[in-house]
Length: 472
Image (cartoon, rainbow, N blue to C red):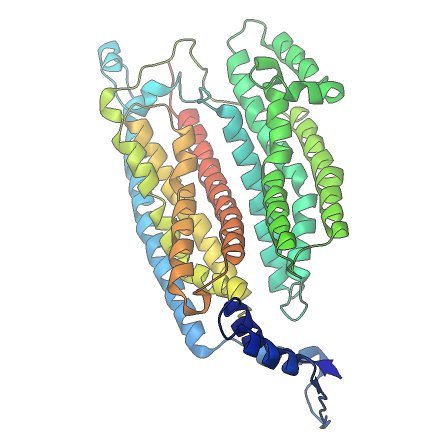
């Protein structure tokens, strides 16, 4: 037996409370509330040839129209990739090689004085930019998220994260994210150490300076909490990089989850996580992720540092007035290209997250992800070369922001999505907070992943061209 309370009548009663017909409605409502309704059902079992392991295949097979749309998106992404590849071929095979021939064949002192272009920046090209510690944290966290995305896609292709097993994908992402924290600490500290190396190479006794720096850094473990309080000074900055890499994205994710979970609990929702779930998440964050980040940082400091091909001058080279302004706007607009590569696939992924549709085409998703990586590499290299050709040495942040600005367009698309889908119209305020809270985390993750792809490719590109040119 069950007690049956009509929801429509309950809403009708609450809306008429205080009105002239409230007493009549209250009597009718009480009559309905005391009724006991008996439900019964029959079950007929029939023999089937479907195996137990393949019982979900009929639900997991994608519709032919959906497949055709996704293949169109892949063709669109391939077209963008080929267009950028042609630009890259023009830049690398023609312009850069001509620059090599021009720079390496200068025999006359008068010609060397008149030289222009990116060679003039050899004394500043590896100069650390402003907010370099923040850039190190972003690059380290992005490398970790890139590894997580690659492993999750691989396991999904192998069938370990099948939609037939509810929650397996989310659980796998949490565990892989915690285990890959060592990558974040390693990459961020390795990049920051390259900055310290470029500064210490100007010293006469470089070897003793490096030994002193290593001892200073390795002594931070007993006092790392003290270092957090003095992040504005030069000494604790290296501690800030390690601790920031350990707390930035995990802290942002867990903080958002806790805040949204509090709203659900205050609203009396059954979707709110219980205390033990929150405790397990905290133990994973501070008992697994944080120590692994510190371990990765120490491994980076015991690894052979980057061998930079040029020295950094003591005096900063001024940036020409002609190189300012338009490249910053180009950096933001460049994010449209990676977004156009993935927006159709992004639409189906958001449908699976917010509209309970099943997404099973992980092979197509992996192919689009590979195309996205290629597009980010090509885009970042082009932006970096244009920046250096304008005799501007501030390429670090632009190589990161050019592809990562696509995260902004993903967020704008999420706003368009929530107001354009009929199934999402009339959402409750808390549901809207959940949507934008989790979509913000997804957009930040997309920002970091695309940024680290672009920065890594540009760093290798700059390192390569300056190691091939002759510096007098």
